[in-house]
Length: 232
Image (cartoon, rainbow, N blue to C red):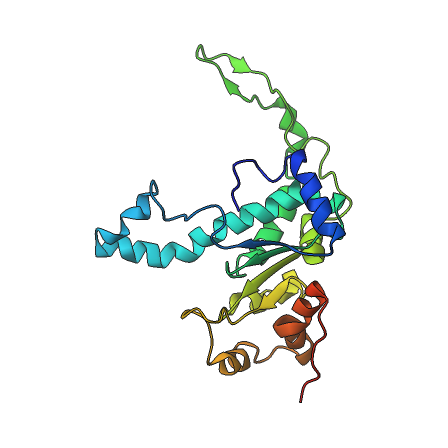
């Protein structure tokens, strides 16, 4: 998900156009772009001590969600999803508990704040002599440039998968059901198989049958143009 050339650059537009034209989702896996715990990361020394290993285990979900959050923000903020309204972006095996906070944060980033009318008065910084450096460009000048809110592009064009994670269902009032796909992650040992039915019965307790049907299969079927077998 972290390519050598950023996804927001114009040279990728021909890729998004081709994906859209073929009616396929642009799919991104959790490992795309490298391992956040790889060489060079302070936590790469996790094998050296139990304390470091515990830190990795505790923060793994945070680390592993940073890259997909950056990806989604890139596709939204660059206007890619506006320019390619039929393009669907699919992020798999990164969980989905981070999606609602990201949607709210992106909307809030473009909400005018108290004192926003004085933004132009703020210097960009100071030079070595302590002199004010003029602002070279205005970040957020003119406000959000696209017709839909960032969160609305997500609901329309972004899909994320999750397994045995309750948070995505606790934030349905933010995300809606359309961006969510449940998956068993078969045959990985951290997946839900062979207890998938038990997991979904527990996970979706209190969720409407319509929302459950969409998340456990309906959304995926629409994404790939598949027919859903009638339930028995």
